Image (cartoon, rainbow, N blue to C red; front, side):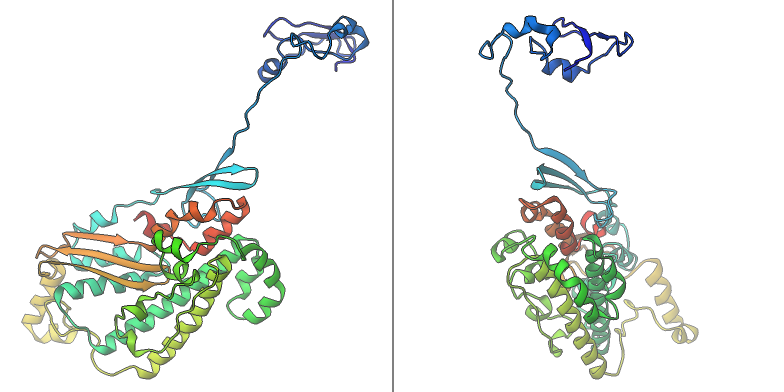
Length: 406
């Protein structure tokens, strides 16, 4: 140590000064951590410092033991991260590369949607549904419409229900394509992002082995834990529970269609991926049946106090013109009552608890977003996994922060 030094001074916790011929008399200022660690007497194995050699290793005066405690590392994941699926911030506690604790911080996209709805008419509040899960807009609107129809005690014509089912399943396919392809991109599979839409069978030949290494036995959640954490949709079915509101609590004539509900075995990332791919096939079955069985007739109710009259009627009927004006200026009156309505959205059970006080504006509209429950379980699912696996787990949870933060 400092073999070229001719003089070594130490003065308690003060700075060291080393002067040497090779350094041309330059002064070396040690950093504070070095001074703290090297405070007290220590050995310098150089011939010039023979006076230090008289101390034996057993002499605690110069060889004091240093007790150190190792602590875990805390890092920030997001909110500006390409794999965060929005504005997700995670505080990860790492032990090496293993995640010991995962603390999600939400609210960065909070807009006060539920409170804003209370100041809008029922018609004006509908667009807020599009801004929740902005990848599955039609399903959110479907849930809102069903809730209002329950309060109004209105029955939509069968053709209108079939059209709803048609667009709900198209939305499901669009959502799953987005979820699966972006998940591939997150864990390093760039090619599937471009090829998945048209040549899936060719795709399996060159990415299946790497894909399975990143997804099999990663992010496992058992059926019991999935229920306890309030999971729904693909997360719940991937753990082996056959629960789909389209089958268990049919709405909009879903009982008229024949389709299967895919479930997983182990509840890992790979099972959730397979469930989404199979659900796209089942959605295509429903769409085909929907087009073949599409009934004729009206698509909406004939009550002009709820639905606006046609342009032809407004040109010939003063009553229809008045209804149109009052509908868009004041809105329609909804009888007092409360209802909870849920649909099987692509990401899980999307529900609305709506309360009416008899006016044209909702008294309360509580939104139950599936992504909120799934994100709350991220700490449980991701515990004791590697840091790189957290990206894969977030991808299979399929989180959109428009509905989480609301």
